[in-house]
Image (cartoon, rainbow, N blue to C red; front, side, top):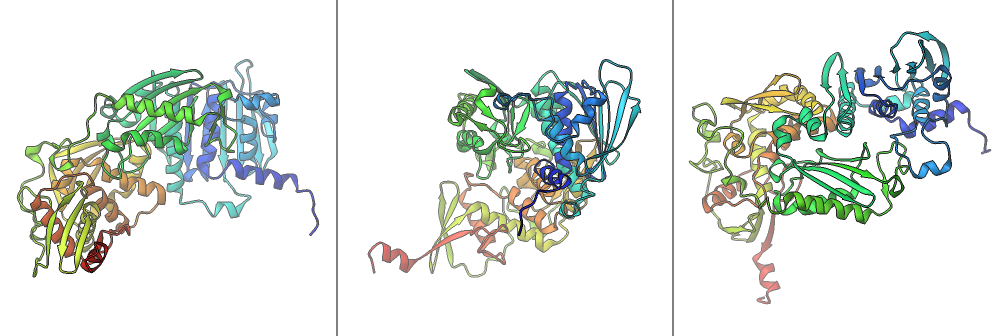
Amino acid sequence: MRIRRLDEALIRRIAAGEVVERPASVAKELVENSLDAGASHVEVEIRGGGVDYLKVADDGCGMTPEEMRLAVERHTTSKISREEDLLSISTLGFRGEALAAICSVARVRIVSRPPIGDDAYELIIEGGRIVGEGPAARAPGTTVEVRDLFYNTPARRKFLRAPKTEARYALWILRRIALAHPGVRFEVRSEGHNVFGLAPAEGPLERIAQLYGGNFAKRLIPVEMEELGYRLRALFGPPELSRPTRSDQFLFLSGRPVQLGTLGGAIEDVYRRYLPRGGHPVFFLYLDVDPFLVDVNVHPQKHEVRFRNEAAVRDLLRRAATAALGGRIVPLPSQASRPRSDIPPESTHASGELSPKFSQKPGGLFSASAPQGERRWRVLGQVRKSYILVETEEGLEIVDQHVAHERVLFEKLRDSGEVPSHLLLVPQPLEFPPDIAAALREVAPRLERLGVLLEPFGERGFLLRGWPAPLVDWQARKGFREPLEAAAERALRGGEVPLEELWREIACAGAIKAGEHLDPAEQEALIAEWKNTKEPARCPHGRPIALRIPWEELEKRLGRD
C-alpha cells in the first residue's frame, strides 16, 4: 500500500470530527464564538434536533467580508498570533477553527456586520466551499445558520440519536454556558417553543435562580476564596439538596464550562458523611485562574483542562466545601424521622383506603399483607443502620436494606402493571431546569402509567397531582423531586425510556437508604416482604441483596469443626 497525500476536502472532514460530534457541539462552538466576540445578547434556534437547522445570532463585534472569508478557512483565528499565546489562552476557543470545521460538514449561511460600517455581508458555504456571497441586511453582530449537518458524511449522521434526544443534549450544553455567563441575555427556542429566555443577571446566584427557581437558589451556601493565581466563587447545596446523579455539579473555569474529572472527588469526600448512600452534592464552582497555571488544549473541544498544580486546586475545593458545611451542618437525621417538607403532614393525600395489596402497617413503611407461611427465619437486628442480620436454618444472612426494599418496590410496580395513583390533596408545585423539564414533559404519559400524575405548568414548572399508591406515604417523607429527576436523567441519557427502566428508577429513589434507622417492627416487615419476592437474590439493577454465611462455614472459620 503506497503512502499518498490526502485530499484537502477529506482533511477538513477528518479535522471536523475532532470538534463537531453532534448538534450540541455546533451550538457550543457558535455560542462561545459569540461570547468571545463580546456579545451581550445571544439567540439560539433549534429545529430537527439541530441536525436540520441550528441558528446562533449575537450582537457582538461582527466581521468584515475579508474576515468572514478567512474565518471559514482552516488554521485561521482571531485568538492567537504567536506560539506563546497557546500557553495563556483566555478566550473560549479559536473562532476560525470552529467555523471551518462546521462549514466542512454542513450547509452554512453567515451574515455579519462590524460595528463600524453601514452594510452587512453574507457568505454561503457548502462542504467547506464558498458557493455564494454578497451584501445583506443586519444590525451589527453575527448570525450563523447551519443546515443539514453531516449531509456529506452519512456514516457520521446515522450514528446521531433521535432529534428529541439531540435537542435535549444541546439544551443541556446551553444551560451550562448560560450558568457560566450570567451577565449575558440568552434566548433559546427549540422546535418552535421558547425553552428559556434569560435576562442579564447580576451574578451567578441570580442566574441559578432563573434556571432552577428562587427557592433552590436561596438554599445555596456561598463561599469565596482567593489565593495566588486562583480566585474561587462557589455555591454549595446543603446535604438535603443532594441528587441521585452528578448532573448538578458544575465547574466554570474563567467562563468556560469544563469537566470536573477527579476534582469533584475532593468535594464528594467532604460531603460523604452527610449524605445517604448514592447521594451526590450539588455545587456551582466559578474558578478564575491565571492562564499560565492551566492548559486548555488537552481536548479538541476544550471540555477538559490540565492544571499545572492539580493538588493545589483539589485542596482549594476541599477547603471551600469544608467551609460551606463547617459549623453549620450536622449529619442528617434518618429519612424515616425527618419531617415532611414537600407537603403538609396533615394533608398527605386525599382520604381513602389503599387497596389490600398495598396496605401498610399503621405508622410503618412496609406492607403487612405479605404472606408469611411457616417462618424459618428470625431478625437479629440492624447493623450500622444499613444492614439487617437474619438467622435462618441454613446460616446467617446479612441483608442490604436499601436493595432489599428496592426489590420489594420494583416487584410491586411491575406486578401491578398500571399502578393505582393516590391524588394529593394539595398539588405540589415543582420547578426544574429547562432540559430536565423538557424531558419530564416527554415522559409524563409513561409516568402516568406508574401512578405519577404530573401536569405541566408554564415552561419549567409542574403540578404534581398524584403519586403511586404503594410509595406515597414513604415518598412524602423524602420529597418528590429525586425520583422525577432520576426519570428525566434517564430520558436525557437514552431517549425513549422503557417502562421497566422507570420502574427501576422509581423503586431505587423510593427505597430506604443506607444510614436510615429502622425499628424492629419495620425490620421484620421489610424482611418478610423481601423473602416473598419472586427474585430475592438481586436488586433490579443486578446488585446482590444479601450475603449468606452457612453455619458450617462459620464454624469452620471459628475452629469449631
